[in-house]
Image (tube, rainbow, N blue to C red; front, side):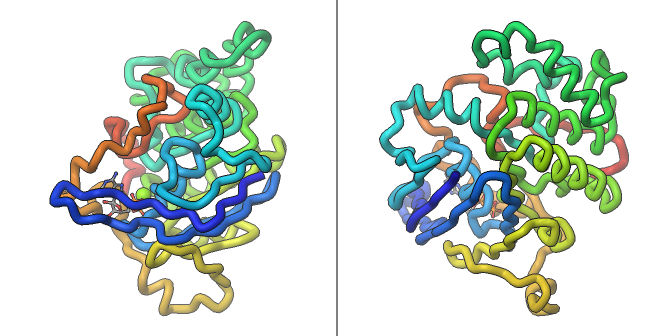
Amino acid sequence: MIDLRAITRTVRLPDDRMLHILRGVDLTVATGEHVAVVGRSGTGKSTLLNLLGLLDAPTDGEYLLEGVPVSRLSNRARTLRRGADFGFVFQQFNLLPGRTVLENVVAPLMYAKGREFWRRRTLAAQMLDRVGLGDRLDAMPERLSGGEQQRIAIARALVRGPRVILADEPTGALDVQTGQVVMDLLDSVAAETGAALVTITHDLSVAARAQRVYRLADGVLVPLDLGTAGAEWVGDVPTAVGAAARPRELAPPVPREPAHREPAEPAAPAPDQQPAARHDGGERR
Ligand SMILES: Nc1ncnc2c1ncn2[C@@H]1O[C@H](COP(=O)(O)OP(=O)(O)O)[C@@H](O)[C@H]1O
Ligand SMILES: [Mg+2]
C-alpha cells in the first residue's frame, strides 16, 4: 500500500540554516495494517504524517503509493488521491466552526463524484451513527465534549472510505479514559473498512494497539519493541505535548502548505494551521 524509501525532508529556516527533519525514513504499511510512531516532540512525526498524506512532499527519496511513485503524480492527481485514499484525524479535531456536526462530516464528500456526492448526507449520517452520534446531527461541534468532537473527526475521516487513516496524536487532547474510547472506535472502524491506520502518539498504551511500533529519533525510524522498551524510553516521553511544545522562534515556519493544495479542503487540513477548536468539555489536559 505505502512504501517509503530513504525519505528526507529538509526545510530552510528564516536565518538560512537548513533543518534536516527527516534524514532517511524507510517505512512500509500494508493494507489494513496498524502502525504506530512514537517520538519526542519536535522529532518530525507530524512532518512524516503530512508526507504520508500527500499534504507535503519529500525533499529526497521515494514514496510509492500502491506501487505508483507519488512524485510522478500531477498536482491534480495528488489532490484527488489525498481526498479519496486518506482520512485525517488530528489532536485538536480541526472541525469547521459554525457548521453542524452533519455538515462537518458531509464536507469531504463535497469533493466526491456521482453517487457518493449525491448521497452525501445519508452517508455522513450513517457514519455519525456508527460513531454513536446519530442523534447529534444538528448540534454545533463546539458545544460537544472533546471525546464527541474527536468522534465527529473520525466520522469525517472515514466517510469516504479511505484506504489509510492518518491519526496525529488523536488522543492528545483527551483524558485517558476518553482516549481509550476514541482509540477503540478508531481501531474497530479501521478494521471494519479494511483501512490501514498510522497513529502518531506520545502515549505508549495507544502505541501498543498497533501491530508495529516505530520510534522517530534523529530523523530516522527505529523499530520499537514495547515489551523491552523499558523505563529508559518511557522516561523520555514528554508529558506536555502539542503546539505549545514547539519552539516559538520557529513559528511561523516557512510555508509548509504545498503549492498544489486546493484551498479549503476540509478532509485534509494542514495541522497547526487551523485554529484549534476550543471547547470547555473538561477533557483537555
Ligand atoms: N515548514 C517548516 N519550517 C520550519 N521548521 C519546521 C517546518 N515544519 C516543521 N518544522 C520543525 O521541524 C521539527 C519537527 O516538526 P514536527 O514534524 O511538527 O514534529 P513533531 O510532530 O514530532 O512534534 C520541529 O522543530 C518543527 O518546528
Ligand atoms: Mg506533531
